[in-house]
Length: 101
Image 1 (cartoon, rainbow, N blue to C red):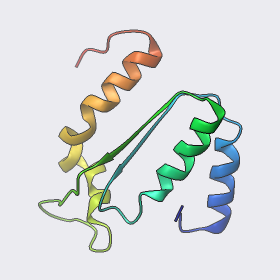
Image 2 (cartoon, rainbow, N blue to C red):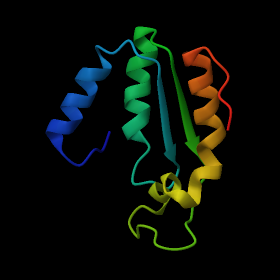
Image 3 (cartoon, rainbow, N blue to C red):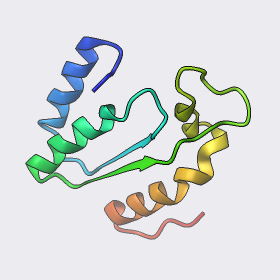
Image 4 (cartoon, rainbow, N blue to C red):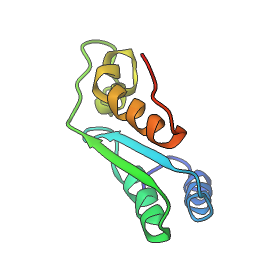
């Protein structure tokens, strides 16, 4: 896991060790790291907590991307079409209702 701040890493893994909330973990393959979600998803898996992990194909923004981690821009308005259906399906499943767009 490569979250910038060591204290943030510790807090996130501690929270994952206690959370019972279904969680959707998303990252692009060419973000700075994928271990930020794989580490947390593994904790959820070992604890039997509902979750879904999705690692998207490398994403290259058309404009204004982050040079060091262009994949992070998948979560900008340019990447909405990449992850939108995954989010809608996940929310629909765990909110127990159909979400209309």
